Length: 311
Image 1: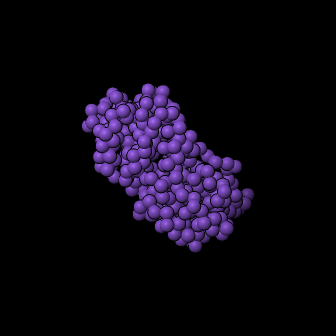
Image 2 (image 1 turned 45 degrees about the vertical axis):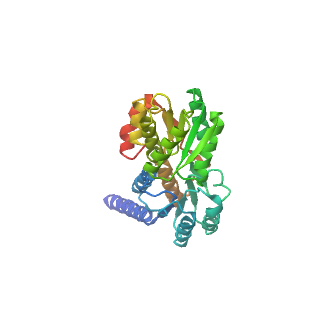
Image 3 (image 1 turned 135 degrees about the vertical axis):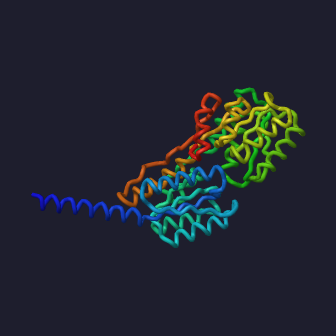
């Protein structure tokens, strides 16, 4: 009996060792259009990193140095050449990235899209998408801001040409139901501050601002309103969250933040591809990670998590 028990224990340990070795040999590559140094994308990467640890797999996060679709397509092509167990991509421009993604699918590499591209993901051959419907989220924000009394709006777009961000502005305009001007900026908060202040100075009818990123657009927009003497007169909302913007919401200096839970956008695709590599498992459809409107009542609860890079 003892010998049988020892044999069983040895077999169990061996099986566990083999399983662990297989997990460690599973390689997944993430190619996004956002750099890990960006406050938003750093949260995505945190999710990726934690999922890799939890699932015992190797994950490599890659992104072009700037918003560059040619460079991003080249990164996807390079990933395909490495034949990973899975590929995770964001799709801000289907025309530019589609051929490279289709090449990965044709090579038999399981692909999951995240963050942007929900409308083209399936067409390009991805198994599913993890993210939020950007137009719908923008529309919900517009409707809420109209309910708050907004009559003239501004959409601060720090990455014009990114289809997902353009959809946010379009949804905002449609939901708002009143005039909306798009203010194009760079992703430099100082540039956002200057251009929003200039807009408020030149158009005193503006009473509503929607930014498309909390730290890059939302925080400098709040500052612009304050420095222009518009506190209490101009509502500011933003997509995504940062500790600074959430504090502004909690203090009544901003209206709300739209949480798409980007941590899940990094975390869940890694989990799904790891489980697919081990067991052939895969959810049957897209996974919506948002939107959720974080208002004054909720803001204080998530400030700490935003500071920790989770929310």
